[in-house]
Image (cartoon, rainbow, N blue to C red):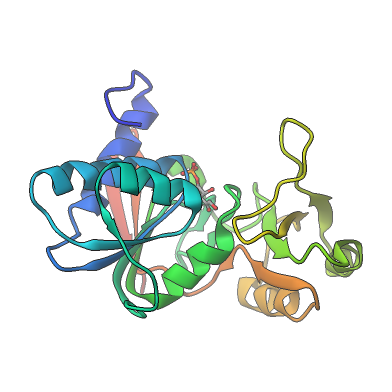
Length: 234
Ligand SMILES: O=C(CO)[C@H](O)[C@H](O)COP(=O)(O)O
């Protein structure tokens, strides 16, 4: 992931990732997100690590763990660090104003939400194409479910008004999360009340977690053609 890229949006995302990585200070416990933007941030942290910064990380996926480990970053878990100073991650949609999110198109939503919930500050890095007026406008809501009875869980999610698709990989194999579960991508269209929908999804037996992140974001760093913008939660 390191090195220059000729795609101007990747360069902007790299600047957002570096800005977020600059928030990490010596001695911090930091949640390390998942996805292409988070990978740029982990790369930036790797460069700071090489310059002598020392912190510990809790990764949100096996992918991010592997990347961080390869950069020499010390990884820990919740047994020694139940509270994190900061977590930095990407997102699939960010609602203007509320800064509520849809996450999980990369399939790591459960660990991402646990890490975000444990963090004193949760900083999100996105390109401007991820900003929406209403969550659900472009992205489905990924929902992690147990493999047992997933068809029944899918039916109940459909009754909430979603078009439900079991996530399949490009090679035709089932997508299985790091926790051994399945993902149901639930297209609701624009969501009026993300908090109520998050609760309704969570009430369905078989659901482990949804990719709706409501009232969790501290700050969003947006990479746009005009440069970087920082949006702060009210
Ligand atoms: O939620 C995620 C993974 O589960 C990612 O943060 C989200 O999919 C954004 O990824 P990218 O930065 O590649 O667009």
